[in-house]
Amino acid sequence: MRDILVSGAFVLFAALLAVTFWLVYMNRASERVISGALPIALVAIAGVFLTIFVFANEPEIGKAFPVTFFYRADSAAPVSPPSRRYHNDVFLAARLLKSDPAKADDGTGGMLLYHHLLQKALFEWIVVQHAGAWDSEQLSFGSGGRMQFRPVRGRAEPSMKLDRATLERLLTGNWFANDVMMPLGVTLPPATQIAIRPPSKDTIPDSETKFTNSICTLTITTTPSQWGVGLGAYQMFTPLSIDESQKLYKHATYIVRAVVSFKGHRIGDPRFPLVKRWATQIIDGLQNEFDEQIVWREARDNFILQQQSGPGGLASKGQVYGFKP
Image (cartoon, rainbow, N blue to C red; front, side, top):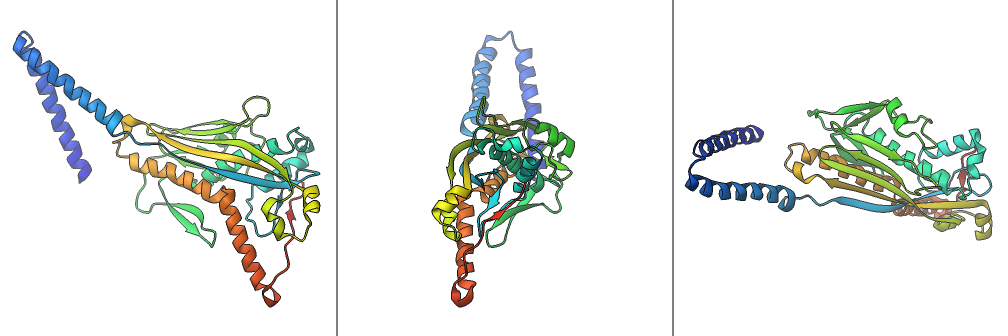
């Protein structure tokens, strides 16, 4: 009903505006008409532009968080410390190293290998969560509160679909572009364009994945942060000594920045609230899934529960789980 009333009011306003311009044109020889109507028209136009581009401007929304990968020092094969959640994407690193062992010796200590994996993992998470619809509701499951999305029932918004072949082509240059773990495709708001720049040690170290449509631009960048030996805070979860851990394992940390900016001239578009929710859900979901601070707190809580559930309330420390190339 509201959309009908707004549309009717707009049509009436357009008709009155057309009649007004016609009357001014028909009386264009009158200096009094021109001198009185022109300033009013200019003020009205300036008011519309100020309202849309200044006063109604929507601020950008963004988050930054760290993501860490752990791997063997000798082969760069991925590992998962005890009690820590892991993603299926780590299997991709093991599979790539099996087919192309040279990727383990890229001159960056494994940073470049896992930077490529991070970009693929972030992009694949978005694809999986929006395989069926982009207009979806956000859900959380489990003790860790990992987010999932499902289409909103009873509502089917216009959308566009990109198939798996197109997604692989967009990922060209990423080392994991052809390692298919994605579903049949992704569903996006209408006319959304995707541009992907893979990481590189020779030019720009950042990677960038950008979604652009008529209402907003969602940009996800990843930047190498630090590289080190050992398992970091997860060391306490294992029976290994610090020296053993530092000889066996390495870790690489990256900073992910996800930012959505909105186009001021579309702030009143009827689809604006839905597209804004789509973009902010992606940002929140990526942080919930990959933020090392959240992952660490979940692992710590899991370890405490495991300790309390063992014989006499104390369980033995766990082993590091490796993925063989």
